[in-house]
Length: 114
Image 1: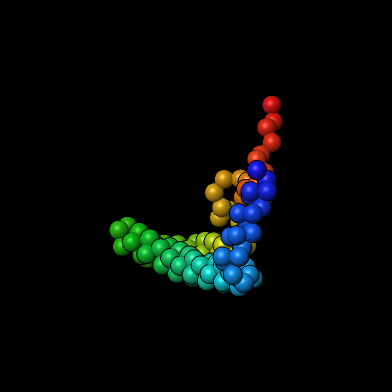
Image 2: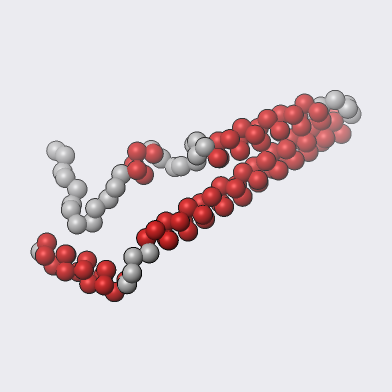
């Protein structure tokens, strides 16, 4: 059965043609970087605008004129913290990160741990 899998893998490799894994990896890395950049920009603009709008709304609702500045500053601090977290990939994945790092091998079944 193992030789059948090897033969199948050889046939698949022949059908795929030349190896483009390096190009695919570079394209995936580029797409990932663009996604992170767009997310960081949205975090920056959204947090600053959100803090400013909440401060402006509270000032208008309460009839004061001092809440806008602290809320705007809080929005700016929050924006930069979120941009840092986004660019450093801190807390962006779902579940345990160790599970995502594990390499999977389709040829060998996982070992049973009883």
